[in-house]
Image (cartoon, rainbow, N blue to C red; front, side):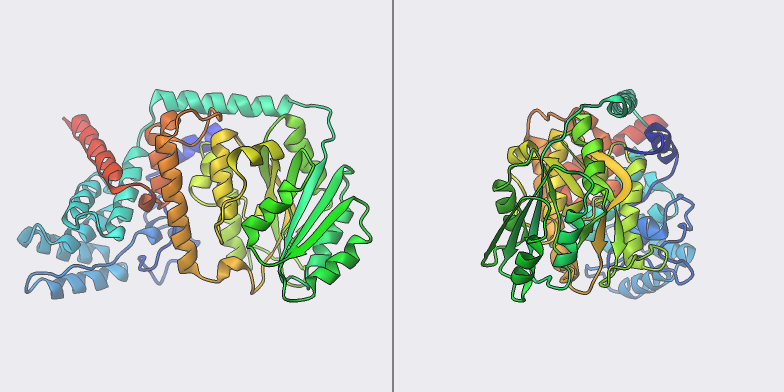
Length: 476
């Protein structure tokens, strides 16, 4: 469960001038500001998740005599000389009010310096001038809308927060005396160096009611023979099948389909369980009457040695996603900004939930994140703050294959999720992260995470206009 007061954390966030999002190519770079240092704008956020997330780039042709000044302004902007850059942008806009890049970059400067209402006006105008075809303009507009929305809270949101905290309190006191069968499913692929360690981490589990399902997904090394040999020492019943390569998501689904457990835990063949994992997950999820949840992960290297977030930027970035869970409105909301579960192996879910949402979809890089987003519509997840899963960081992790491909996949996944939450009717999770339940708070949380590309331009345009109109009425 979350270890601090969720309401207190949310109230603290509500007082911050939030300009957050994911880091992007072309983001502002200040040589004297480290990526993980506090942002100079005093938002209380790390630089890479605040002003470091604003996209600074130009793309349109300019009238004669404007281009040189715009590029000089951009050079000043990119080196952190914001006052001088702003003066040049303003000069261009005074002379040429409809130069899209000048309007856009002036809006970005205002956003970075905390003038959110003015930034919103310029960025919305810029998106119109670009005819909503420039992703950077939509991204920055989304950050400005989120910043304006973060300035207040409607009573309905406060009531939801209170109800959510009461639900968490109820979870802590709920207990059912049960020992459900847990199916551990392993999709194995080319991990001959690690798969035996993965299996051995199941064998030493302190929870007794376990079955093991392993499918080798067409490994080109000798993983299959190593698996067969290791399973001979299993204290639990097992089933093993080797076949041609079909991909991780399809392999997990096939393994779950052949399982008999009431609950399921994936174990990736290059990772391993903590000895207490299944016992603690059963206690926190199954015996609390919940349908799914996830634990914190620990990071290990190719030799199985612990990796510290203090010494590994990659581990630090991943750990931050999980650390941020308690600062979100709900645990489910945390999946709108990233994947705090880190890996499919950190998930623990009821077989009935898996069947209801149709299992894992065939995303190469983000099938686990997509699963969590869809599961959050059905049931609110639980969170186990102890590190019960060892996630191995090595040179062959799938997510390292292509950052560009992974980003395109995330964009497609979020666009699909947005369409689902806009069009679907009832959601069985009373705290599902959807507009129907949370109203503008949903959009704030999506946009504050840099996910403007997931929202259809017409929806973002209407939202920006509505927020600007609200601001105008407050000033009247």
